[in-house]
Image (cartoon, rainbow, N blue to C red):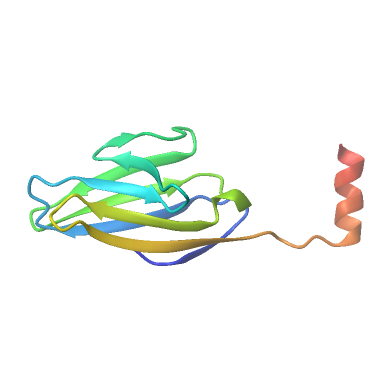
Length: 114
């Protein structure tokens, strides 16, 4: 997983590659206090309209892709992919969200539409 910078409103993918998964399962966790479990195995636990999970199973490795939809500033932070092995295997990536700057004329135009 790698750090990502997204523009407000974009969808973002976090890809977790796991070799020799065996009987273990993959979870995505959002770092916060306390940490929030987003998904475990193929089940989404939080905001099903906000997150999407895809898996690609191969003979040697598996990919798990967590999509964060319509990114907002509140989505900024660390996301971890964890495998329930002993010890737990984990990879973390940071999401930063950029809000586009608008010129005064663009802001006035938007206000007239409201």
